[in-house]
Length: 170
Image (cartoon, rainbow, N blue to C red; front, side, top):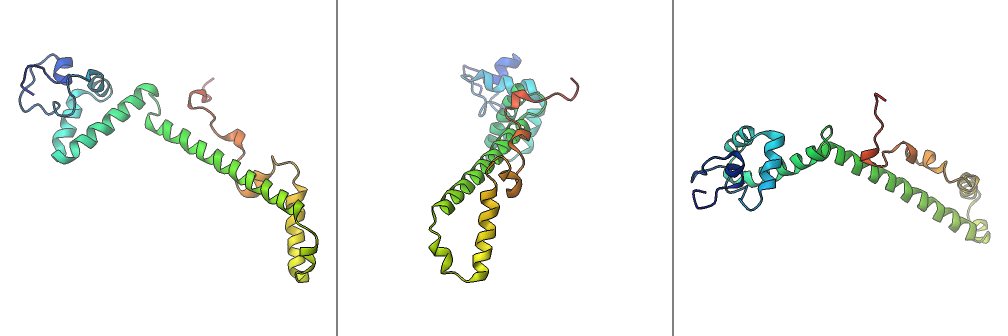
């Protein structure tokens, strides 16, 4: 920066901010926490080396990624971003299972409301197939077993909350 106010990294490291400071464009003095978090996780020297190896047009995206990863590491030191991704993937899986169960329930309700005379107009082979499908679905009055038929894991096996992980050592 070289002006009256040094960048956040130079302030934190208590050094003079040179005109060609690699941190100045990405860590302004008005947001010191941004650099403090990145420095705590990665170290100023490593961040400086990473930024110098990148073309100028990619540095802003790299800094954004470093800030995101540093914040994730502070919140979850073991898993970092991977913990957040795993949690979101488990939520997607649970929602897919809930959607499949809801669709199955809708199908069962529609089959209960379907008049019997529509089955009489079909051929005998397709009539047997429909009856087999109905008997399979209608025999599952307990909707907790439906996820097994649909190929989904039980919702009790999924991670409910990233902060409530079971420890392998306790």
